[in-house]
Length: 286
Length: 317
Image 1 (cartoon, chains in turn yellow, blue):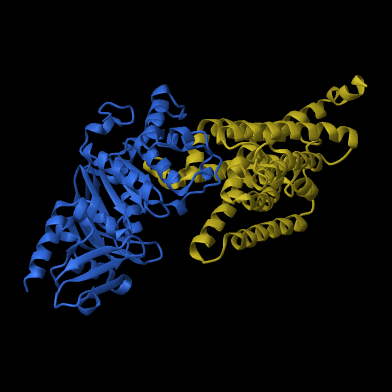
Image 2: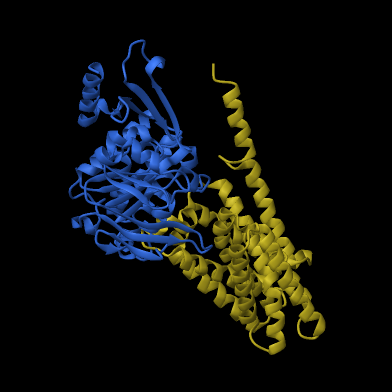
């Protein structure tokens, strides 16, 4: 039995898939703490789709795909900011227009040059078949992002909570927000390899949302979210060996299961706790 | 108190002041919100910023916070350009309740700690002096017992006090308060006013935007009336007059006047004027064009004398 459970660790590609997934899952979870608090959750989804044309072009031009992805992600973020400032449209409409446009352009590029890139690996991810080169790229992106986040999370928290106060202690909200979106674009690129463009959104929302139900303190919330991200991502990669299923699908299913558990059983914000509180109010102690 | 409290910034020796000279602020949309506004305030002042909604109060606040840059004119805080004043932590801001996300996962003490960021190092790690400053600030607004609560679990008045505590922990010498009395009960309002008086005695400068016209004479020594520009600025006694208020508010104020037959059977010329901008009303009493504050009597020596004068004159037509 033990032997069977240890079997995946006998394969170099499995070990690599597990630690790369864990690293990416951890950084994405860190970002998720910020993203879900601002009502920007769909931003992650939008960026993931907006990256596709960059990746396709990068393959076409034979430059590192991360550079192309990063560039087109940034371009999409700027386009969204521009449309939002210059029109009265609501945020969801702006995000919807920009990301579908980018995604469409990406599919178009891929369909005109069918040999350039495997669409499926962009859309669904392919961590088990990740190349050495890509591992290096993903690892560097994730590690750098993690270091920046650990150093600057308090400043980012203040900007997300209260921009005026951030300004009054001498921080620049604009600069910090740009930093945040750069990190988000970079990590979305990294996550693309693990879970694919479609499921990236879960990686940058679900762990934060779960942790939100479990803590009222931002610092602790980050720890919980990163822990969940690392464990579910590693477990997803590991389990995909036995189930022969999609790694991305498993990771997100694990994350969702944990979210549901928190939703029901969280000590303060869960449904059971809420029901208990409601009962305590309606039936005061004799 | 707390002459050497850790809550005071390195720049505590600086004398706080605000100087706004011929400031015009234009938004990116091309709308000019404030034109050629000028006023100046010195240390140990509580100044009310009064005007209708859309008169440019928040624009002015944003300009003082460095969020908006004036298209023309100059703003200086403690003699420094706004950006430098902010860098030195001289300006603290107490936001309106609507501006805050109350569901944010932070505890009361976390919020107050945010006031200390300017005093911390690159990684914003709290040292003992920061924790002490937070505790002291919370104690001062009587919120120490609530420090482990998530901010959304507090009442309106408690929320206000948390953000006041943050301004204290920051050690801001210039404190901007945006509608501090909205959604706050009378007891909290009194507590906030008492605290502001203490801070004034310490030499700090407070600029308060408020619709609470009635209480302005009680605790503000200066008033700035604004409607797209500064209409009048100066000491409360000479500036906060009915004529100026009418200019600032036009027809936007609720205005009741009771006099003559509605108030007396005799020929008494005195009348009661109630001016209100939705919150606590301003009540004036006396003959036409000689009305004085009816509510200022208990707090404000001038108001009290004014009442008496009006009474004497009214009695001998």
